[in-house]
Image (tube, rainbow, N blue to C red; front, side, top):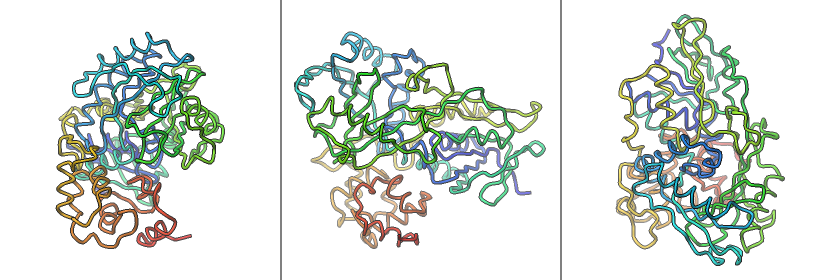
Length: 489
């Protein structure tokens, strides 16, 4: 038998990748197994925010909000290329919460999260600005952060691999059982052994528990969140926090320079679909929400893309799915006696709290060495200070370095590379970038994604490592597939 791993992590989403990374930094030998591509499921289907969750204050989730708010600036410092501040405008509307409630909530939001660099909440006059209906005159604005969610997962896995982890994608777990004091794991046609296992399989966490003959929690809730993308509704860089007539909320976020991202929904109907998809009812709901606020009237044909993800939540007795806690639970199964190999299952969680969740998971497993190291360690490419990557007039220092190495690249491509890779781009940017595949994407970048970031298909490249799928023509997609040796249909 090969030397067993100290820890096997099942699930290559944000929680699994974060736990693998943290464990490697504590000196453990780690195996990370993902049935598809990294972030292929829920972790690439979020609203793409690093935030405390202002609406959770309404449900008295004060501890969760405080934990998430404390993480905002920590994560921003670690990955300023893929995480950056964003201001959110919260219009005051008759059907929404009263102004005094909004003001009190924002006052608390500014004070329980250790905010230092992000600007505080303030009042704002709208008077029809931001493409809003003219009768929307007043509101508040506050700070949170935006994140490229799928790239966050990839960079967590990259850091884990750089610290010694073995990362296996497209390697589904087909069987696992305790064998002596170890776990025997069959995955991708191979057999692995590990002293401890973490089940971070997201919506499939129950299936993994069943295969391991571990007891399931009494109640789990599968809640689907769907989003739509439409042509950009306004030129303002701020996002909008929209209060809806049924008491729910959604966001309208400037996205990819030419689009607005609108979401999310919360639905338990049809949440077992794999892969999940936005239903026509959800699409209509989000269009109605936007049309209530914006002057431009949106129709179904204006929707250029949709996506959906399923969150597995621990049932806290909440009636409506949007009220269910986004906090996490960690369930440990130690088999028949305390000497058996443990399995820790992750239920729930938010992208914003992935780092603290990883710390809590390892603590539950009794791994205490070098605890807290991730609070100050940058992710790959993030070893620079935030330096105005969004400024239109001047190249930020990391962009200047990229431009110096490859003067033939266009300004938009330089900016995209800096945003996606940070200083890591300097490892593959050069005078000769090889064949141009489309939209500034070159053979050199593709080699980096396949050699260092586990990309295997055009979908991996266009929809998770980047969002170039919004821009690639059919001919460019075919050229990319050909370069990958993928069948072109």
